[in-house]
Length: 259
Length: 259
Image 1 (tube, rainbow over the protein chains, first blue to last red):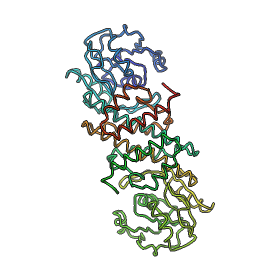
Image 2: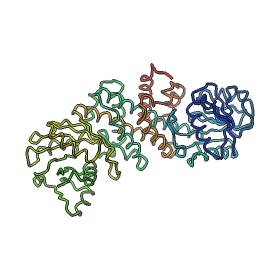
Image 3: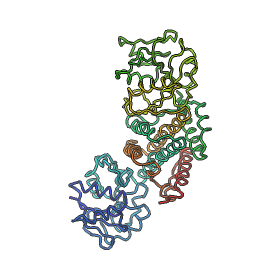
Image 4: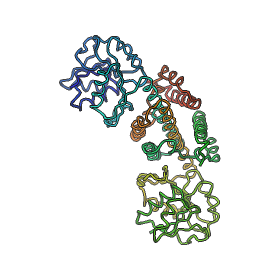
């Protein structure tokens, strides 16, 4: 059994807590958080869980400390830990392994998923990107990740940054396009549910074909009549710019692969 | 039983053929197509199916003719039909109901979904957007649509154009962002499968929360350090522009809703 301490009170910390709680190989011996979010308050009533908001009260006998906190809190918190030479891993896609203080052995435990408050996840489908400075520490992170998911990726800090950037396009930016679509629907009294099936289908498609081959629509067909009619119909200046820029990018992507 | 003729040989025609074939209330009495695509060639060997490539050989006793052809073929084909005063509906999101020749009764039968060649669909989840010029014709289209799905929407041509535009953002543009994410992965030898779980989760999320509330990421958090680091790391000029434009749009969307 591997003993871990989870530091943080946000969505990632909550999901990791929930996920590890259901495993037999990883035991959470303590939770640390500065702020009392609702789920922490809820856990406070659960017997047998050691919760602290005092960093000096952290147990020093865990095999792994997971810093599931915001990027800018990682550096500061890692310097305040009241022990040395323990394995301390942050959960950030964007931070280098060296972001943590070198007082402890450093690692990264980055689940490449989007975590929401009230949204249950299938943890076994989450890719865990891990990194450590020694074989032994990597092995520990691997065992901890394997308790949740078979999808383990050994990424360097550079690769993980790239994966995070790619996820910004595939997740954050995609969600903003959903928002724009919802706003367009709203202006004409259309229910957004109208688009949910095509959104799901588009996401499903790229599990068995590349996005390059899955591309459809007026820009892919080079249908200039539809393209110019749609640009004209957009009232919102920023949405119009996004329409034009992505359309140009699609046209360019397929200029040698016209239908 | 409603007798229909399907005109067209593309993905939409093929899927509508497959879907109606499994119903009891709608009977396909003929297929018309100018070009012999592989699935048409396959059907040619099936007994009891009337397939023609001669427009003058079209049967004139169907209750409904579905023009499942490209937008620019609709107008021309609707003028060549060798009969009058029958119900003729196109399947385009973008064309007005008046795009068809007024020689016949006009209608629209637009399935708001993305259709691929070898990709089976759950037809009962597809929203069908229908429009007609008389109550009787609308009733016929409704019965035909209900044979496939309970999700029937009565949209005007104006509303349907808007729905199609919204779908361009939610489907076509989103898929292009998947492509950019895949390209970013490729430059650093990362497998695209790394992103598939987060893509599915992002699509799932907006079935129970609005995209406005589902937004996460550095732009949503106003994390300017990450934003500027990510912009700098993008080599591809167009991807950099897309990153900047969508980031600005997200920042603007939440300027009065900062976390």
